[in-house]
View 1 (spheres, helix red, strand yellow):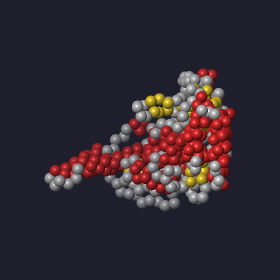
View 2 (tube, one colour; view 1 turned 180 degrees about the horizontal axis):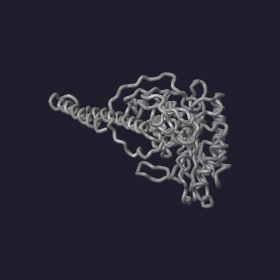
View 3 (spheres, helix red, strand yellow; view 1 turned 30 degrees about the vertical axis):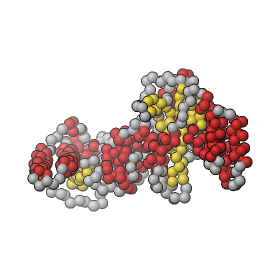
View 4 (cartoon, helix red, strand yellow; view 1 turned 90 degrees about the vertical axis):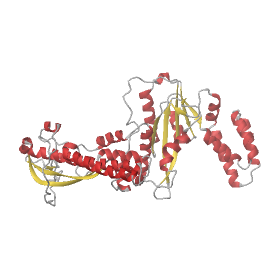
Length: 466
């Protein structure tokens, strides 16, 4: 280890001297070149240190008396390539065979948690997945580890490895439930293009919050928001079950006087009225305006009268305005659009009235949240998704806005992986009824690679028993 650090010191000092000379004497370059030089050298140093740590640990295992009692060397100098945030490096380790019929394995890999076919470190995988929630697969790979060229497919595979993130994965144990009189639930959907190019699927977004608070003169934010997202195709009840479970886990239900459910009137959104405590429905003003415009686009003067009737919650006046618009509409396609708008407004009349008359009702920001949380990554630019990809990305976006970080993704990866912790005394490595080893004997034997003596320090690993 000391040799590596000494070599790094000499190399970086020499290169920095040349770079500084280049800047001051020749007028070429600037601080950016120095930063890039230091970064590249630090990444190189990181790879060398990891290589030495793993090979030192492997040497300790090989020389351990306890290891010799239970495992025999099957093949030395077996090469492994691992990609980390520092870049790609290779190390060599010993392949062992159990004396007790427990099969074959690389003991050093088992101890540090490297799986047989794993090429990318869990920390880098988590970073890639976190970046993919904001950027394209290609861009995510470029940003995550510039020194190594990773494919779009690799990024996709890493997202698949994480799987469908549960919307409650970040929820912590509630010590004391919150007490609020009014709770707000907003819902909307985004239409995602599928890879076939002919069809679209719907990804849904629901979020619970306690109202709005001011950040500054121009910006507000939701109080204690919690986001839920996913496709929930043909299983909307599962989505509302997640929402109501969250509410019951985090709030004193008896204290809630009303839960305001705001949305565009879609049937799946109104289903939430059957689940929420003391629900009151609010029609999203964005979609109301959309249908008002649809009804009066060819009769602009009638738009003011229609809005006046809506703001006064005068149903008779609304009907009169629509009657006048229909009377003056000759084109059949436009007449159909007017009737659709009329039907929409009548079907959501209670949500319109409640918005105007209930002092605790609020405007719905679902359209903005859809744009910011889902559409920004999934539908605002031309792209096609598979069903599993759309499911995973929508949940990953909700995870991000619920406060999820790369470190949380790393924990998920560890949790989701099949734990292959080798009990060196009792666990059987043979698969039942197959006669196959968990780690089969290698088909090709790699020639030994000549290396000098390793001078690394043996740290706490000395305490590890085999």
